Image (cartoon, rainbow, N blue to C red; front, top):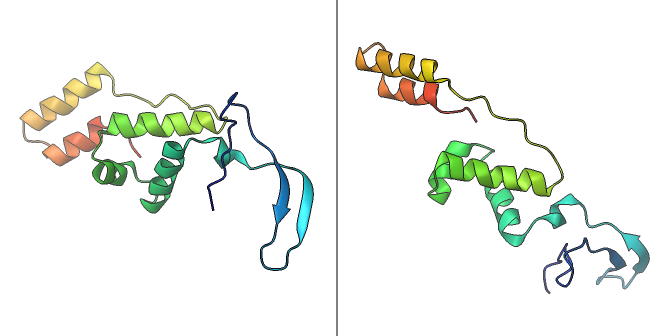
Length: 124
């Protein structure tokens, strides 16, 4: 058995299913059926989503599993979100003044390196 493709390999448009068949009882349905939104994803994007679910949606675990940086994992997630037809809200970033304050607190020993990383990295 071959995996179902969601995009036409010729023109790139969404494919429709026109026949469903039960191998057990030989029943069949014919008509126009949607494959659903996840079939819009490429094979690589589907694998990413599978890993994301397995990692319970935790980007830090995805970083470890995939050997990628936070921005690289985030970019792949954003790509999947767009492929599913959704918009991505801009992630709040640390201002230069906030960054300097965290680094100053770290240098003064007021916070640990781990706490500084947590404060400087966007959350999951």
